[in-house]
Amino acid sequence: MSQPIASALATLPFELVYDDGEPLESDWHVMQHAFLRELLHQAMVEQGRTDTYAGGNMFVYYSVEQAREVVTKGAPFRGPDVFWVTGIDEPGRLRRAWISWLEGGRLPDLIVELLSPSTAQIDRTVKKELYARVFRTSEYYMYDPEPRKLEGLWLAGDAYQPMAPGDQGRLWSRQLGLFLGIWHGFREDKEADWVRLYRPDGTLVPTQKERAEAERQRAEVALELVESERQRAEAARQRADAERQRAEAAEAELARLRALLEGRGQA
Image (cartoon, rainbow, N blue to C red; front, top):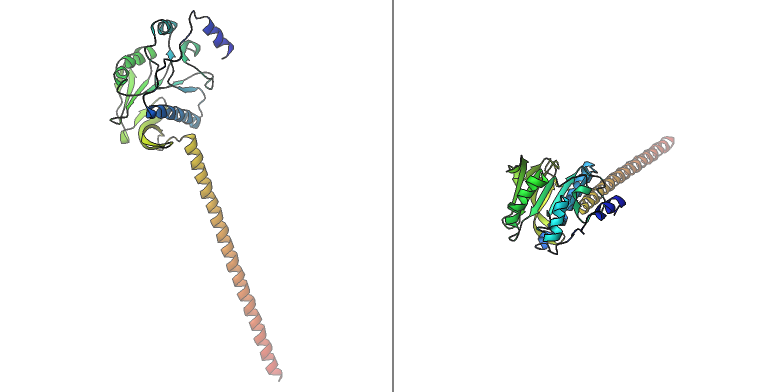
């Protein structure tokens, strides 16, 4: 922890809470949470942005008063499942919580909640109200894996308005300059429907592993092309050798015939 941050926290008359002890709902929730954070990071790398942070499963402290309530009355919720913030310094710094007054007052610009039977109601009411009126989060997404439903909301004034889905039900994020959509496939060894990011042209934002695999495949294709060119060159060389040998044989035969004719003439 940097010295200014440590000093700022030391001035609080209480110790911040960093964990409410509540695990994520299922293996899918755990994997989707990490998956989406990785994709957000990779998307920003593609765009060359260095002022963003993708977090989640941590407390978001938006004021000292709220922090005091969390400590004295118990945490009302862990925080957004996944959130993304722009316009920040030190994006690579490790954080145990998002403490807005140590981040230049910044709060999430985009939030994704992964719904479950035990959290859907609060995600659609209490959290939605908090994100709109206190966080002022521009975009709020909710994904329910059971009905396979992805919803997106824009902030308009003090309330959210629903986004209209585009092609294949994908939702356009003005904040990211990307689409959010549902993708069916494998994450590690688990086959399921996952929330993923899509570029404007409809292609997936790849994970680091997918990018490495694509580069490996491109290298293999390039190697195959080089080998194919080598084989074509070798075949051309062999044809040229064969032509040369035929020409030499023809010249030798012609010389033999001339010599034979000359011999007969002299006889």
